[in-house]
Length: 277
Ligand code: SAM
Image 1 (spheres, protein in one colour):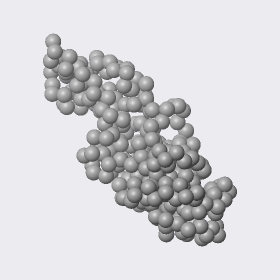
Image 2 (image 1 turned 60 degrees about the vertical axis):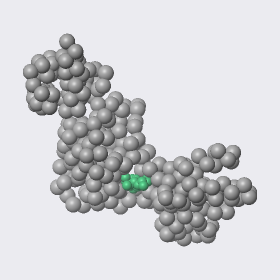
Image 3 (image 1 turned 180 degrees about the horizontal axis):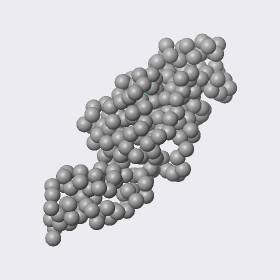
Image 4 (image 1 turned 180 degrees about the vertical axis):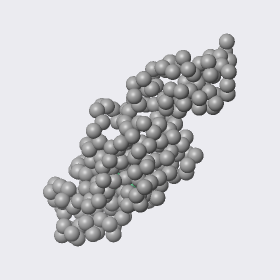
């Protein structure tokens, strides 16, 4: 499993280049993309195409090649294979067949962005890509908003504005976030700001809507995190007792400034308690 650069070709390790030059065949996500990289470094190793849709069938063929004594390297278009990229199916098949899997580490947008984010929370959830459809995306975000860990998303340029808007709605405009765009490339932008400000910054500048993105959201503040459940009960409980949950949450959010999702989850619990009495 050989990592390739995520932009800057000087991030290609000498070990990665050596391995790619020495193996019998390179399993590449897109042979045209990898072909350019290999050409640049004068590597002539033949390639086969392993994409998401043929990964299972190709895994069998690759295991057969290993059985025949060949060495096979897997790469993706950029970064570390098997991280929001094909590779895991092949790795599992190779483990199952009893052959060694050797990682050759290097760039990944995940670790590159995280290293420049400045979050002190020691726990991180790597989510990868959110669902492309708004409803599914919002549903996916709801349970993440109040977690006591940093959350990392990959995003494509055509969805960046919609996703930032959904992140603001779910995590609150005040939550600290980092946008890491075009990492290691000419127009690299790393911006750390409250989510609402970040969304405004990207919206105001077309250039900031281009390229590749990692979005990192800081952990929920302790008083809002799941676990410290009663933090806003003094406001929320009487509202829930008198009003429909949605209305109670909207008012409690206006009064306390706490994130909507934390209030909503807590309101549901309070409502259940009320109904049980
Ligand atoms: N396996 C790769 C890795 O380890 O970095 C990620 C592959 S995934 C299909 C591609 C996504 O990674 C992009 O849509 C973007 O979210 C992120 N990404 C890749 N390169 C990037 C870069 N140079 N700057 C920011 N994000 C990047």
